[in-house]
Length: 118
Image (cartoon, rainbow, N blue to C red; front, side, top):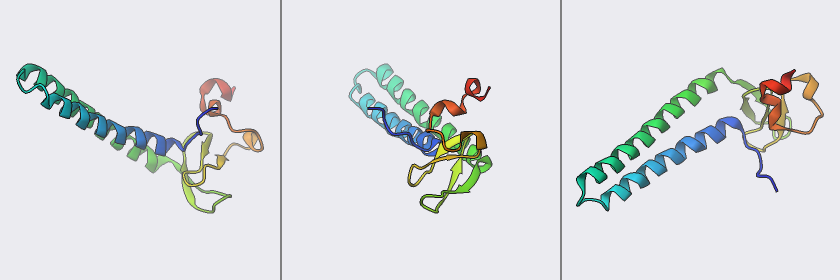
């Protein structure tokens, strides 16, 4: 069974949040190597890079979110933001589209790829 598809903005934000936790865990592992300062330093730097990467992703998705089209979900009535031709509602996971050629079709992630637009 395939995993349920989520809203693109929420999925990217979840990835950025996981990078923060991964960075903290990497730095915590570095504490176990206190006797070898070089190895400890490597783990600390990798953890900081993970957290900095998360910061960059949060900034990027924030800027992308300001350009996203805001629509009202016909199912739950709440406003949500859409990226691409087809996306899911961020609240109830209802498939949404702004493309009239996709209305009534089964939702597929490939609708947002360049090859499927032809």
